[in-house]
Length: 399
Image (tube, rainbow, N blue to C red; front, side, top):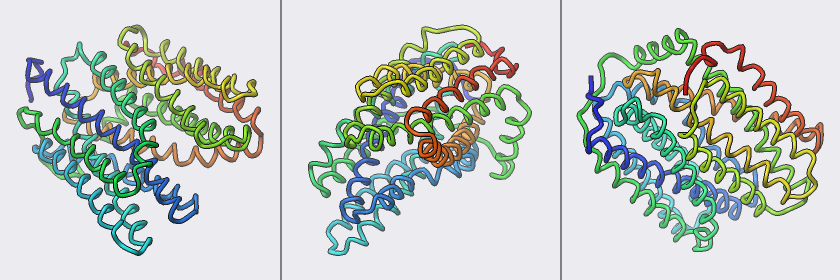
C-alpha cells in the first residue's frame, strides 16, 4: 500500500488539492449562473434555463461507477489532468458556437458542454476524494476536511457574487473568462507528485466490493441514511426559500442570491471552526440538526426578507460543521483504495434525494403556504435529530 507519512511533499500535495478544488468550485458556481442567464435570454423560457442547470447534475447519477473506475486506475493524476483539459475545451466549444448565427447551436453547445463538464468534474472530485485519504495522516483528517470544506464553500460564494460581473462582460467574454478560470484550475493538478496506487479486476468487481462495504458496515449505512434524509430536507428548504422570495415577498432574483450567499458564507465559516469541535458524533449531529430545524421553523415567523438572514446564517454554520464531521468520519473508516467509489455512492444518493426534494418542496409550499411550509421542513429536521440516538453505530462514532 501507499506510504501515508505526511512529509513536505504530501503537505504540498494537499495544498495543491485544495487550490484545485477551490478554483474549480469558483468556476462551476459562476458557470451555473452564466448558462442560466444566457439560455434564459436566448429562449425566454425558464424551464429551458432550468434544464441547462440540471444537465450538470445528471452525470452524478453515475458517480458510484466513476468512483469505482477511479479507485481501480493507477493513473489518477493523468486522469484528473485530462478531465480538466476537456473542461477547458468544452468552454471553447461554447465560445465557437457563439459565432454562429443560429441560437439553436448555442443552446445545444451549452447543454452538451454542461453535461460533460458535470461528468469531468465528477471524475476530478473522485480523484480528490482518493487523494485526501492518501495525503493526510489520520490525526489530520479533521483539520484537512475543515480546510477543504471552508475553502471550497468560500470559493463557491465568491463565484456566486462575481457571476454578475462576469455576465456583464457579454456572452463571448463571459465564457472566455470561465475558460481561463478552468485553465488556471489545471495547474495545481500538474504540481501534484506521488507514487501511483490502484488495483486490478473489473469495474463490476469494484462496484460489488463497494456495495458490500456499504451493506456490511453499519456506520457507513447510517451515515448514508442521515445524508440522504438531510439532503432531501435541505433540498426542500432551498426551493421553499426561492418560492418565499419570489412569491411570498414578491422580490427579485437579487434577493435569492443574497440569501444563498449568506447560507454559503455560513457553511464556509462553520467548516472552518468545525476542527475545534470534538466528541461523540451522535451528540454533535443531534445538536446540529436540531439547530437547523429550529432555524427553518423560525423562518415561518418572520415577515421581512432581512429577518430571514439570521436563521439562514445559523443554519449555514450548522451545515458547515456537519459536512466536516461526516467527511472526517468517512476518511477514518473507509480504506484509501475505496474512497472514490464510496464518495461516488454519496453523490449518487444525494443527487437522487435532491431531485425528488425539489418537487416535494414546491408541492408542500404550494399546498401549505409560506408559513406552514417552513414549519413542516423545520419539524421534519428536528425529527431527524431525534432519530439519531436510535442509530447506534453512528451515535458511537467519535469526531
